[in-house]
Length: 198
Image 1 (cartoon, rainbow, N blue to C red):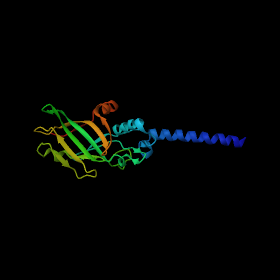
Image 2: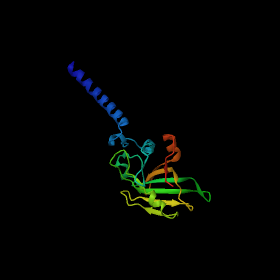
Image 3: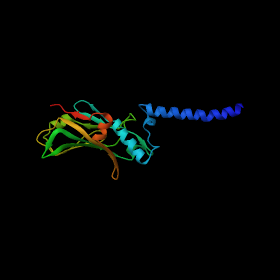
Image 4: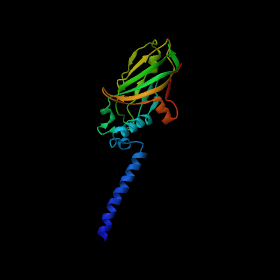
């Protein structure tokens, strides 16, 4: 009888352990297990990946520059940056158009995991250095860890001071995972914006 009880108890312990592990994965704020999507594939993986990108979006003001990041996660190859080696954020100037076209800023760099496993390494937007330059359709190289490039399109004769995030994508030469501003607003309830001082 005791042997039979032990046999019943073993699967029960395994079920409870798995349930506890699942709860921890859903509620943990840090650690690879909380962002491991390797058990998913196809549309389920893409949907979860897009959600993680949006959940991790963050912009910090740091010493005359902004640092922008998105959510990091793992696929079956480990860090998602092993599959998609670049990341791009596209901003549109608020209330500014030139010849009917929006002014765009594309911020692109290497996809790298941060020390915090839930985040990607931040790309740097050194707005103070940008604002002293003459407005033009140009590309600025940033000497940061991610080898960030900032490109401007449809520029007018002055720098916009307010920008809204239009899209984010992680990509390589053959494929990408992207989210747009409607999806970002739908999850966060507000647009993602940056403001440069006058």
